[in-house]
Image (cartoon, rainbow, N blue to C red):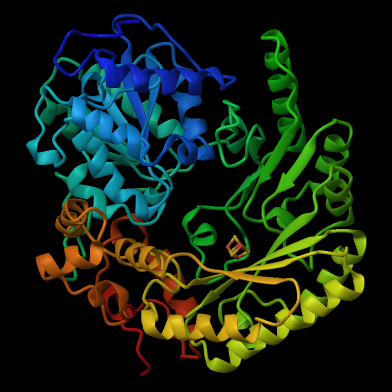
Amino acid sequence: MEVSRGTARSAPFTGSCKLMLKKTIADTLAREHGTIIKRGASHAVRIALVFPNTYYVGMSNLGFQTIYRHLNARDDVVCERAFLPEPADLQDLRKSRTPLFTYETGMALGDFDIVAFSISFENDYSNLIRILDLARIPVLAHDRTSFDPIILIGGAITYINPEPLADFSDVMVIGDGEETAYRYIDQYIEDKNKPRETHLQHTLNLDGMYVPAIRKFSTDEYNTSIDQVAKQQVSSFEDYPAYSGILTPDTEFGETMLIEISRGCPRRCRFCAVSYVYPKFRALKPETILNLIHAENERLERVGQPKVKAVGLVSSAMCDYPYLDELCAGLDTLDIRIGVSSVRVDLIPESLLNLMLKTGLRTMTIAPEAGSERLRKAINKPISSEQILTGAERILTKGIKNLKLYYMVGLPTETDEDIDELIEMTKALSQLQRIHGVPGGKLRLSINPFIPKALTPFQWSPMVAPKEIKRKLNYIMKSLRRTPGVDVKHESLKSAYFEGILSRGGRELSVFLLETVRQEGDWKRAADEIGMDTNAYLGDMADRETLPWDFISTDKEQHRLQWEYRKSHGLPHRSKGVERAESRVLSPE
Ligand code: SF4
């Protein structure tokens, strides 16, 4: 491989502080199984795949792991990884004026053909700016020249609302990236000796590719000629299984092999992007999953490593997975621990419960989301309180020791009575645990503010003010203080409201993001500095005629969202065929 192409941005491993960094990375790579080190032909396209957070967070991300393996599957591509350095390393980099480099070969990001970001969380947007700055690549797309790499953005955020990153990216992959990324690489190879502008023009014509500088979108006025970008879906889910190809203890899941057994969700809870942004619910066949584990075991055996010890089944709709009994029977024959995502407590089949208990799992995660039956109906998660209690009693009696419960506060139409019911439900669960559960079992409540997400029926709903959210959280914590075995936690409110702003903004937020980085993450001060009204993003959007993410949704999808919104608020439905602009007016008639 051409480790260095001899530019000023290369050769990072020189000087004392750089040796420290080199050692950190070398130690990290030594703990990995499955690292891909490719030499690649001289004409190979070189891609730096970047996760805009630390190694620990990035390598815990299944999408990042999958696209790394997928890009390297091409002979004409060499793909290496880079992450946001830990604070101490960050200081070293800055002090030594060393541009950020990749893990595999230490090549500076600026020397790659393409720097591809895989982004899953809005709160990582400012890290993208930090990383470009550390790599000495112009942060804004319009400042880049032919001497700079193409900055490509893909990942989960492109299914929902990628517009706040428009000014920082040259190209974006909208939706499933597997096939689209290959089409883009083919185009890149074809255009290799052409001017950057010509290449961007050609990219504009590829299905699923978004070139923000060329395809402009107005957020200010209703515009019937919005250029749509068709969100991509892989032609066969079976052909592109998502699993962690690199196992390392340095992730949230340790050396657990994660496998995405299904994508999307058929349940349509009105706050949840998973159900609305994926084109449809898709599931891997059990034999595909078992074959992946066998193949990984064979690979580990070849390099003298022990077999896979644990498998994490990733699914947003575990209990809707259509072949669950068959899969459990297959996994039961392997000597491995099994972990699962959250489950519907009323739907969990005996086969999964038994398998989890047999392999030592003692904590189960369930997500009632709202405390009362009325509110669960309004958010379209119509599970009754009785079903939750009966389901909990069943799993506690079976031997599941701890329950983790996810709730939100500030959901549309929520009242204090709903909060009271949440408290009563928790007390009832605690009592069930004392009567039927394993001694010492815990109920862990994770309660976070509702954040409205683009392309869900609640995309127009406001985020409840922080003062009110704090009042509700304090009330819950105070009311449950003396209930045995109950722990209540919530995420940082500051980060929740930052996410809220970025979730529903447009490309004008680039100024805000740049200032937030300048203010070292203090987004409130950044908003004050630039005179930005954050309520424009956190408030009610029901009277907005256009939304920044309109270009990745169809009229049909928007009508469906509007129908769901009106239903949840008990508003009369409009007849089919209303004009798009009119259909946005959501207030009562
Ligand atoms: S919250 Fe869960 S059950 Fe509801 S739509 Fe989302 S993934 Fe499906």
